[in-house]
Image (tube, rainbow, N blue to C red):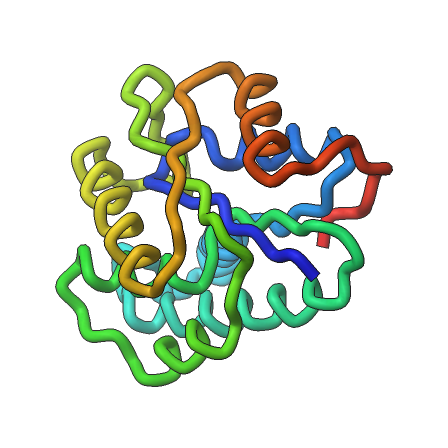
Length: 186
């Protein structure tokens, strides 16, 4: 089991990279928050990060723990679009307390080192229905993510601001992985 996190502020190309890694044959786990936002909007729920970040973080924790458990039985490397420690950084940036359940989940569900961070990339940043932060907020989150993962003992490497093929090559080089046969997304 080798569970890797690709994280960073919103709009820095993480999801595009993960899509390319999946096409290259790697198993990937999509971002829990994006799916949860879509589900909560469809339900007309107030559990959205811009309305109730604490409640939303709890939903995300539960989903991310389930994703981690499902991926833990995978034979090859698995790449996550964000990891549980991201919840700590989101709450820190918002000035909100971190519930004990989230701290416990982070401690109980480790990832493989290094953590790969996508740095802010103003040239590609756009807002959409699930990406509501400004570029300045995305940059603040990136710095909080770096501090959070480092405080937890993870070495952190920045992804290059480069075309997706170069980012895929960078990930393969850093992790020492070669081509893999296609695996379904988890």
